Image (cartoon, rainbow, N blue to C red):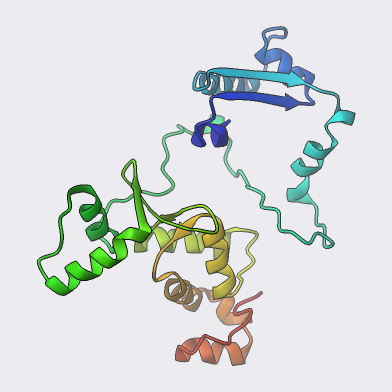
Length: 240
């Protein structure tokens, strides 16, 4: 429901194999458990954002694909050729105030001149910098106050300032299954997630340099290149 709301979907039909969940929302069953009452209230609030919203129960035998996807986080399929991304929800939504913003633009950064030019046509006083901004601007898009980098082969990428970039890099490098992957892999994952920063690769290398686990377990040849700054041929830095 959160994803559909973000994508501005107006009509949504949800199929679940839980008779309890479907009938509680449809008013056939009552929610007695305190936790279920909170979830029901949350779903009812989210349902107001759609013109049409319905939950329907289907038998588990007719819901095999969805059931398999729901278990991917706990299973490993080495024969899969395509990557399947799984969101790990660490905190129950009923236990949060739901006032959160994953990306806050609260400081001046490389994005500020571009945003100001797109908003008001304002350019830096320095003629050289002003020319650079004019040349860069066509590949950026400002939508509802958020800056995106246009992409012709995929979705537009949300731009990040250095603080935001470091936070997301640490989450991907240290938080997602604690893989501690190399800088190219981490940067690639972040771009696939839909984020962009012009100094992404350099920022990732800096985070890896400060990662204690990577310092302990990285291959010595790769680590020497990382310290010297020659990272072009490094593969798998810091894989623990």
